[in-house]
Image (cartoon, rainbow, N blue to C red; front, side, top):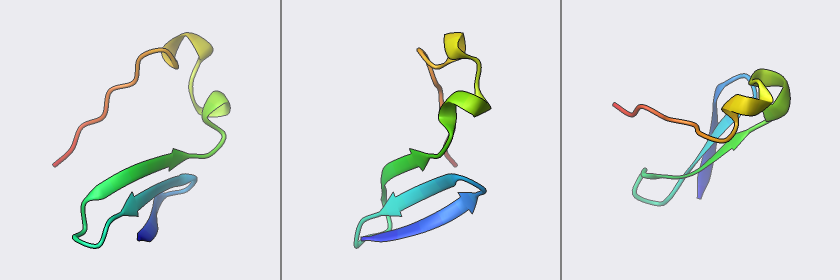
Length: 45
């Protein structure tokens, strides 16, 4: 497994084929309002 910090405090974990298998967001509660933490939507390329 390999990890990469793609933005400050946002870390993606990859499997051996390069697929994203995990997302770590540090200090999440300071980045978003509490009411927005219930539903998060991600866009991928």
